[in-house]
Amino acid sequence: MLPGLAVASFRHHSLCNMVKHLDTHLRSDGALADADTWIFDLDNTLYPSQCDLFAEISQRMTHFVSEFLGVSREHAYAKQKSYFQTYGTTLNGMMQCHGMGPHDFLDFVHDIDYGPVEPSLQLSTALERLPGRKLIYTNGTVKHAEQVIDRLGIHQHFDVIFDIVAAEFVPKPNKAPYEQLIDKEDIDPKWAAMVEDMSKNLAPAAALGMRTVLVQSHFEWDIGGDADHVHHVAEDLAHWLHRAMDHHGPDA
Image (cartoon, rainbow, N blue to C red; front, side):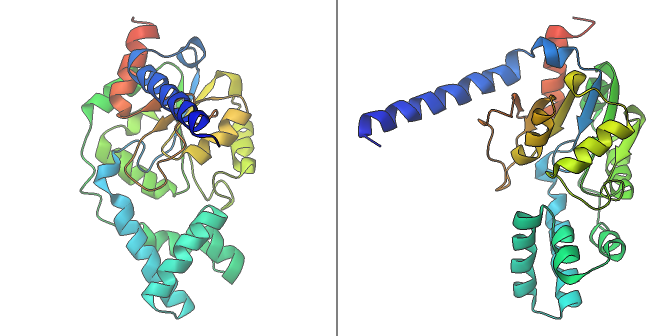
């Protein structure tokens, strides 16, 4: 690329990011405001990524993989990361490549201290203001999700938790479980919004016709906020939801 074109491309990329980030604080479009179904990811979405529950989960994954395969922790960690990138989750990689059963793994890796997750009255009031149904769609388990939302004090706002077991252990961003959730819960994607901390997991939702919101985190997968399938970016979910309702909600 010629230097001038490179500068122009960089400026265009920066401008797109700036506009999208302004959008997170100032407005929500009509399609999003009129959503009658809100689908939320769980980890690093409903609670701040700074809680870093995933660090403990990751350590327990490494331990389980190491014991299951009879390899060093270093080798197990490399396998874990490789499977996450290739198969969507470490669990899926272990099932596909090594015939591992899922249930003992899921029970072990989610046996963690949930203390870092603190109650969030701001998030609870934001969810209460949202019209329509609220669902959780997670690559984790119902039990893990219930522990998290009980800690946050938001359990009462959710009608459904669609977990990795309900998805028959097929993780995001595979399209099949998104379609399964839509059929099971009678969701019209044109009137649905999905909120996630991983850009790639929003791509199938957008392809199906949903509006999408990317919640920023500090992890290495926090990229892709400028992708076309990401319609909104939120630095702080509770704050963003309140602002969206302030500008377009029924009590605006």
